[in-house]
Length: 205
Image (cartoon, rainbow, N blue to C red; front, side):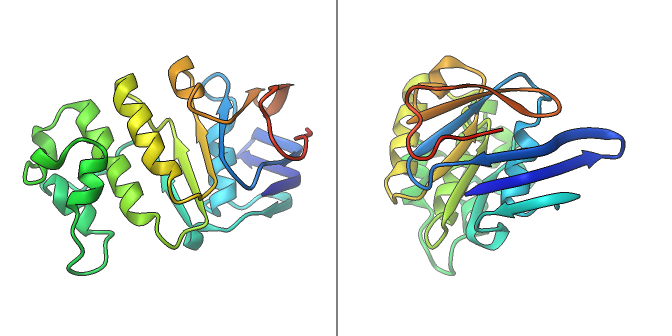
């Protein structure tokens, strides 16, 4: 996955300017940096949700990607199981994905009755359910409101298919779950340092 000389702006606000970055094609890579520096925009460009004004993005695109937004974006008045049935093949069982996030007992509970952390875990279960056949997982602040123990268990399940994962995070616990951590500042987005755990080609900006 790479971005080459990418420039992207929202109106007059430049988020990326002549930005080049090569990312590992395996494992879990975390992007760290202050809110608003451009991490989410980077994920959206890799997914094909945004188109750069200049430069080139080489990534699987939206059809081959699971994208977890910062917002849970759950369907109102649906149960936890109903959220997963919306992305699963017909007659597929949603319980394994809910069990993977520790919510099998809440399968028939409307999401409005769940706590914020539970709703986030439902969103993660939906990402797990949608992952088969995909080539990339893009997770924007995936563990907001999720306790450390559950985050570790869920990350183990996300890793299991061997699909490369790119996530954004602020907290040390979430960053510790990654194989590589890239630190950024901005906007415009720029890499501040290379983490010693970074595998593969060295990212450049």
